Structures are given as C-alpha cells and as structure tokens.
Length: 296
Image 1: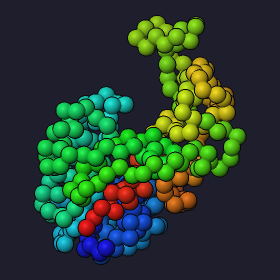
Image 2: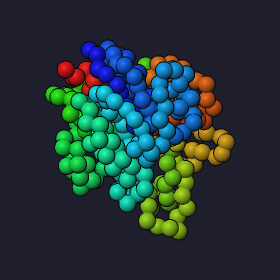
Image 3: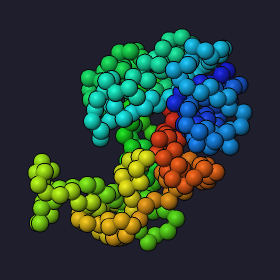
C-alpha cells in the first residue's frame, strides 16, 4: 500500500515509522513534531530523511501538504489512572487539543491517537471530539509486557491482535532473574500488612513479584516500575537499599526495546538513562503495525 505524507505528533523515537515499515505501507515524506533532543537523535539515526518540525504549539507556522495520515500519543500524565488524574486541567493533557486542531486543519484520510487508560468521562470526551470510539488493546497480546492503551482511529474494522504467547523468558538476555516484578513504595506495619492511609507508618520500598511472572508490568520512564526477580511470587519489604538490590535487577535497555517490539539496538547512540526514558515513552510497535494492517 502507498500513501502520501505522514505527520507524527509527539513523535518521540518515531515508533510509527517502524510500524509503517513492518506493515508494508510506503509513503512519500514523514514529518515529525518532537521537542526532546534525545528521541530526535534516535529518530534521525534510524530515519535520516525525517523532517523535524519542532514544537507542536507552533503548528500554525507549518506549511504542509498532502497529509494522508496523522498519528500521535499526546502526553498522558494528566489522564493516567496511575497518576493524579488531573485530566484536562493538566497543561500536558491540554496538548490533546493541539492534536485535535491539527487533525481538523489537515483532514487526513487516516488518524490514530494513542493514550492511557483513563476515567470514562475523559475517554468519552476525547471520543466525542474525534468522532470515533477507541479500541482497547493490551500489548501483552504481542509482547511480554502488560501495557493497556486506548487507540482512537478511523482505520476501519480494527480487531484485537491474535495472542502470540510471548513470555518474559523470550526477551531476557539471561535467565538469572526470570520472574516479572516491580518495586513500589508501601506503608507496611511490622506484620507486612498495608497501612496506606496511616501516615505514622513509614514508606518502605517493597518488591512485588507478580503472580503471572511471564509478563512484566507496563514500561514507564521509571525503571523500578518494571523489573525482574529471582524470587518467587510474593511481596518482599526492604528489597531496595540504595544501591543494593535484593533479589532483583533492572531490565536492560535491550530487553526494554524487545518489550516494546522495537529492533534490537534501535535506541543506541544516546545516554543509557535517556534510552530507558525514550523507550518508556514510546509505543509497542507491533500493536501499531497491527492497526495499520487494516488500512485500505
């Protein structure tokens, strides 16, 4: 299939270009709007013909033609159920309206917006603004990562991907820490019972080894949100005494790339800490590839 020009908003490391290539969709020019220098460096290393446009709020200065596809994932911090859920009061969440204005201006044949699980009210408001209902897809169907996301698109007849049965062991560089886990701050009494609302109980960094140890929690920009452990299912208080990790380790950047179904080494060329941040902010490529496969 061939389309004309593509515009990637909040483009990050340009996972959309990887997905287009895998889906066999050719295009003329790819335009990217991104402001972080590290993801831009990754994009230009892998896709040197990309035209970088800069700040999305300056879009009225752009002079683009023949945009057939607009894709993006507007900042999610104000929408996420894992955060404070400020919703549209969060300045980052308001960038959704820039996405909406750009779509209404260019009127592409296809559009795709990705975002996190959020309150029903905000989800429904986004759906009303875009004129489409989202498809809910968990990346665990194509990856060893639990990453639940909404995808709003007018690409027709999108259904869920077939479960590939990918396990954590399929992407690890070594098998010394085979179980999925995360490290969270918990208020635990002397018996290990949670006392979340008792401010007199100090917060302890607690290792939680998942019951389903074959899928890690959602990758984020914070490394301890998804780690691997040598311990069996359970909760282990005081699992972290900086810099000592007791029975667990961080995922390597290569493993994180694999969890996002990126090519091995895709993010090489920037600082290691910046690689994890860029990967965590990215898309699970094979979910996007699956959606693109329904273009007609």
